[in-house]
Structures are given as C-alpha cells and as structure tokens.
Length: 266
Image 1 (cartoon, one colour):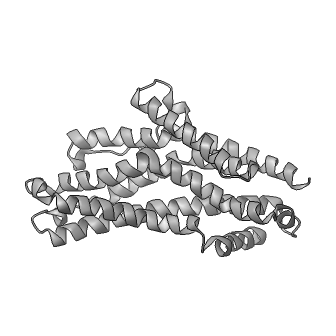
Image 2 (cartoon, helix red, strand yellow; image 1 turned 135 degrees about the horizontal axis):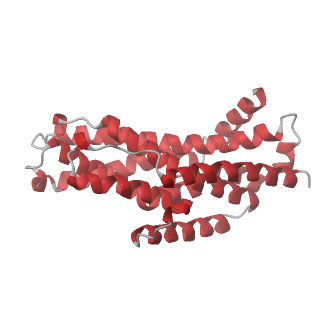
Image 3 (tube, one colour; image 1 turned 180 degrees about the horizontal axis):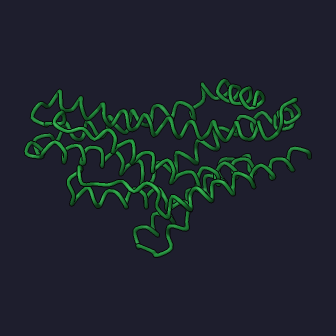
C-alpha cells in the first residue's frame, strides 16, 4: 500500500504542469462558459420557460457536448498523457527497477488517470450548477433559482463516468503498448465514431461496444427529459451498456498488467 501511495504521489508531481492535468480543469470551465454565453445571447427566447425546463435545456446542452464525443476523446488524451512521461524519457525500465511492486506502479498510473476523469466530470457538474445560477442572477427573467436539480445532475455525470470506464482501460493499455500518440489516438477516434454511428442507427447490440456507452448513457436519459417533468424522471444508472463497460474495464485492466509485466523485464 505504501508503494502505491508513493507511486500515486509521483504521478501527480510528474503531471501537474502538463496539458493533460490542466485539461481536466479547463475543459469544464470552457464548455460551461460557451453554453452560458449562448444562453445569455438568446435569453429572450426562453423568457416563458418554467425553471425546470430552463435547467434541462441548459444542462442538456452541456451534457450533449460532453457525452456525444468529448468524453471519449478526453479519455483518450488523458490516458496517453499519463504514460507519455515515461515514453518520452524512456524511463520504464528505471521505474520498474525501483523497490516498489510493479502492480503498485501500474495501478497508481491507472488510478491517476481515473482521478483526472472524475475531476473533469465533477467540475463539469459543479460548473453546470454555478453557471446556471449565475445566468439566473444576470438575467432575472430566467427563473433558474426556482428549481434545483443538483442530485439529478450528479447522477447523470456518475453514469457518464461509469460508461467511460471501458474506454479508459482500453486506451490506457494502448498507450502503454505504443509510445507514439497517433496509434492509440487513431484507434480510439475511429472506435468513437463507430460507436456514435451504432447508437444513431439504433443497432440492437450497440451496448456491447464500449465506445458507444457514453452516448448510449446520454441517450437513455435525455429523451425522457423532453417529455417528462424532472420530478418524474428516474435516472437508471446501471444499464446494459454500463454493465459491459464495467466488465470490459476490469478484464482489460488485468490484461494490461500482464502485458506491462512482461514488457518490463525486457
């Protein structure tokens, strides 16, 4: 356990000044700000909307941007960023020669990538709430203060997080195997586009494809938002696509350790 904590702390110090770390913070800020500006400029069109529908429109715009394409791309970038430090400095052998169990080193890197994804989604939920309330203050005619959907937002982002775990494990393994950015990025991008196509075509077995899970998670929730009052909505977190994402994540995580263990002794 001590080796794991030391390795995790080391990951933070190595990446705290990298673009990967700051992307987890800046991405939620920029997405929320862009949607805020769009709603501010078009506030006259939403004067008559009840508070609940205002929140659904505002948060749905942010979730739509993140869930359809940005979350998989962000995960691809983060997983490569975590491992690129060792690739660029060619320090894998040095890292595994330290008196720390290889399992601790590998798990610490994975958990740190996991932390960055959690940080990004948590901040996205917080900035969604913050920007929505700010919009209600600068545009009093928009009655954002008349409704609270904080719990629902955190449930939605938690489901998005679970749906992205399969992608995280796969991309983490690819970024370990290949030192260049183009191969894991290319495979991840093609798989993401394939997942989007599968979901849009309503393919019956799209839930088996991990790269389709974030969009499926979003699609399973947003249609209800258009036809139901938020108080009547129930966020079903554990669905088939989430099950597949969790199972794929666990299997690929274990496979990745054995791949790294064999590679480290070369």
